[in-house]
Image (tube, rainbow, N blue to C red):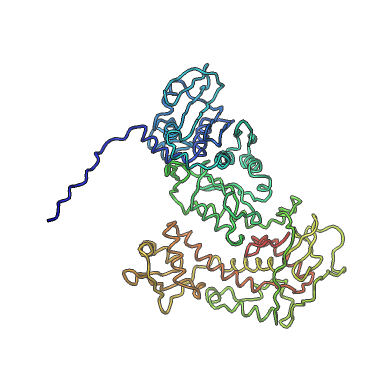
Length: 617
């Protein structure tokens, strides 16, 4: 006979004490000392501070003190400073939907006070005395202090020792605290910041005066990130419209292995957002090599009601009402800034776009027979591209002046290591303005480089990389603006789809149709690709469809998904441009070399080839 099991005893439902509630909230708000620094500096900036001083002991574990010269806190309001959900920032739902301050939740100070020994010293504007509030006893007493507020946080995590064990070394925690202040400093150039650690001044940034906000931010970027950042970046001028993007974008030459110098601000708030990151990455796609990460500082302004900042307790995430609008604005601003060739700017500034490399590595030399006619016919006979547009037919229109003078039977001269321009062909005297920013050609080096001179000195041009970019951009212009031609598949390509892919295919049918894709259900767990863009007909339809569905599922944005198709198309064009560009050991005349230089000056993104290599130094 089986024994009847008694039901397990269930704990009674009860209300948690306020102290435990605050400690739970602290687990979301406070991760490490840098989290406290971020919250306290937010409050200082909301108070109108023009000078913020941070003092730390043991990387912020023993002491975090933030001093400001803001408006202060009146004595009658000081007692509420450490109460949960007590704030002066918002008073209604309408205020929350259009919040313009850095802080607004009213829970940070209460959460910090629950896990540390806290006190506030404040003197309100116009007050005769300053007062100090003890976070645990609630005692208020008069003290001596100038106008402004000081918040002291001692022995962080003293009441939750298990959390304290997860902290890193003092040096690591100090670095995170400095980074938290640095993010504020990059957007508030009108405020001075100072950081002291163990009584030693470790960082200081003075306020940048001036009515021009963009110029002040450029100066602050140079102070915080180094002069190299401002010297190697292009300026994004704020445009018109509901989303205004300004800031500075680093040139591809200074891309980094990590994305640790990517700063994005929305209405003055530092954020991390996938839509903005995707837009920035897609703008750099054509000019970066491999997984290199661009550097930039973007300042995005839009109506407060069009962005929701109440997404996460740390306030580092936002949600846009129209993500596609923001994506297009960011990508367009970066595209316009990066597209303009920098040779003219470098000539005006008297410097090259980047520091000259220690060594110049020659690309691999390839032997070609019956070049260029046979190779060009092979490259341009690609059926998928020729079928996609009637405009890509005239090879001479795509074949620049620098190549047109060579007959089909000519072969590259491998012995031409040095090809000086004849003296009769060289222009004597000062360079005329018609010579352009890259100057005039004077020699061909090792059959690979063009040596030119301009008003500033000598310029070395990688002729294959430069010509590759010229041809590539010309191909893209010819295909852009045409409606996406669709080609139906004789035999639909089927694949086993996930539940998310099935849902996305059904809900985003109109978007897929606009992109030239027809993806329909084939069975309960199978999708069928019945049509693809004509320019990509020779590719893998299943891989293409899955990539587009993944982007739509993640971003719910047709503009983002369209980048998948454009990326696939550009890969084909890049391959064709590489095959069609002038190769190593091809002897060029002075007219051909100068023609290539002039084309570079008129071609977008001509400072890098399709693979991200610099085209000139």
